[in-house]
Image (tube, rainbow, N blue to C red; front, top):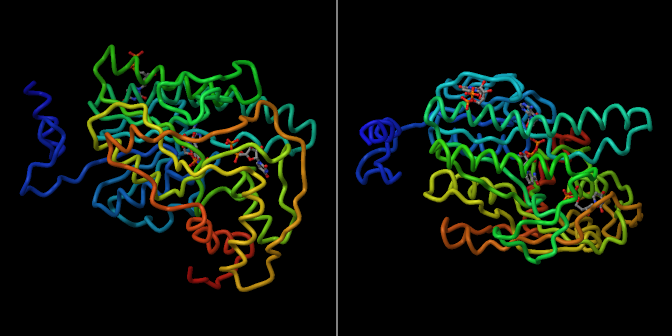
Length: 363
Ligand code: NAD
Ligand code: UDP
Ligand code: UDP
């Protein structure tokens, strides 16, 4: 108990995890794995802004240094090129474990030979990262007594038979399908996290993240929002897979970051669904995006862009929508940015990366 109180004191919290009233919160040292990626880099911005020291561990598989360049030179920021499947020794108070390639779809568009070799490696890498990478970060948490947060995914529900999805639902995942390296990898990561918690008393948190969008998304990773925004800006047809009636719920990245921080700082292990319950079909999305972009971009965007139907990917979930009652009740969290409000916030970033245009549009 004394050791725990000492550790908590070092972190500037009392044993209940709260900052004692009247005292300034002590700056924490936090590692963000996958911090050079889309979500991770926004999380790093928030942690640095509130005065914490952040160490990013990333192998740049899908992440980019550009996402973090604005922190270079800040003594509270460190960037380590490292693959989490290898052990690493760090001294930290908290671990946000995000490192994982999040979009396995783009390899399917490569020529056949590349598909075979690259997709095999890619799938192997995902499962390896999820299992061995998570194990290493849990080992690190155990050694230094840090709190560990896993970014799991709505994909643990697979092609759900329950709608909307509640955390108590165990899911409907094909264990041998093309998506299973990601789905089952994350499910195993959740299992490891809970086993370290139950058997070793490690402080853990689990977030199940639903589809998220915003600036710094990879432009060509095949995810639907980045595809549609890039296609609208390039004046290309919107590629809808299947009949386009499948649904997804999209949350803006700042809402997610707020949820992750509340989860880490709160008293509950989870799992917690973090997502925006607004549900859209892919056809609705293909129609909405060009119209929304037309309003903010002053140049020729066809608001009625053509829709091009393509065959759907294997095992594509038919519907997805989070039940966020648990996060609302226990974390006091809910998204604040609707899809219609959030889409224009991506425009400047995508335009600059696609066209190199310095022109900034005020949205
Ligand atoms: P991203 O691909 O932009 O970021 C992942 C980061 O992890 C990248 O910077 C990548 O280089 C790094 N990485 C991958 N493998 C690594 C390894 N072995 N060692 C070190 N670094 C490694 O993806 P994102 O959208 O920012 O996703 C972040 C996390 O959130 C992931 O764990 C993902 O599964 C989860 N998630 C994201 C979404 C979403 O819609 N964006 C939805 C559900 C879950
Ligand atoms: N590990 C790590 N950094 C640390 C502590 C552990 O990367 O600071 C790795 C360690 O190499 C091992 C994994 O985490 O592969 C699990 O560690 P744990 O101590 O739980 O298991 P053990 O090493 O006893 O099998
Ligand atoms: N999708 C689409 N057109 C695209 C890219 C994706 O219609 O250009 C569909 C895809 O088939 C899926 C949905 O959009 O039904 C969401 O795909 P994404 O890869 O963004 O996320 P996930 O499938 O992981 O939820």
